[in-house]
Image 1: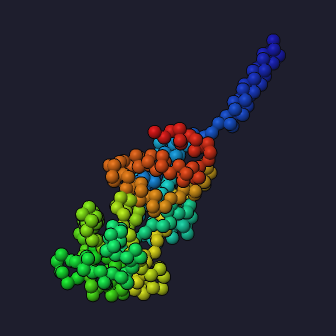
Image 2 (image 1 turned 180 degrees about the vertical axis):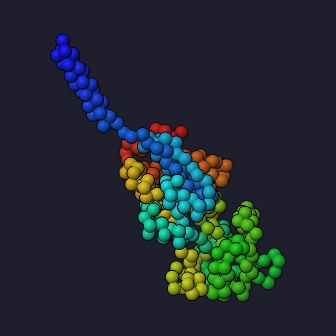
Image 3 (image 1 turned 120 degrees about the vertical axis):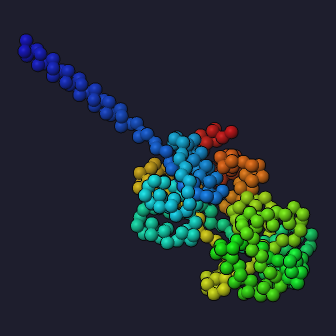
Length: 332
């Protein structure tokens, strides 16, 4: 009787062990649950659209739960990225936070996955309609501007033209003043400082809608340059030596990278890192997206859908075939 009980207990233990082994083997094939990806929601339009584009692809193409977005300013959000409170920054303008960026790269707390868009631009512009109707030459340059000053007469000083510079206190205010002196344009133009970015934009829009002359500073990507056809006034090609001497050359492009937290980079699915590494756009595409958003009163989410529907040939190169299929099926 005792022997029978012992045998029964042994059989039961063997059966239980087999169940545990089978369950363990079956569990090996299951994927660990995916965690929501956290984006830095910085304070300008283009990055907020890129966050939504990336989130839509990750959620619908790769099966991630709804992304999280942490709003804030450049340096606090970059600090959060280093700590791991944030996983992804879709637009790190490195020269605008060079010291913090360099320290983080050296410490190995963040990883730079490469450019989001490399051809961002800032400089001087005139409306393209002034060229189309013959007011200005097609190859207009800073060397030509002195002879055309009367087209741009300053309403407060008819002896000179007016140049709309950037905002007082911005670094570009000082740079534009140095450029003017270096090019000798201070002899024929007054530099006008708008009180805000909105005031600068308003001056351009008011002139554009009436097809009046306008000469001033602006930058891209922006909604304005997605909506209004403006032509850059050519400057000498960028040279580091010239730039450091008197800024008498083109503004250099600023590096705009996608950067991620290092620990997250090492733990997340490699397909996600591959996608973010391949993610790349152009200033022209960004201007188009932002112009659409501004003209239609569209949300950031709607602007992302606009991009995905209109630039399929671009974003499908970033993702796997399977993810591309799923994203296309999810698009409205």
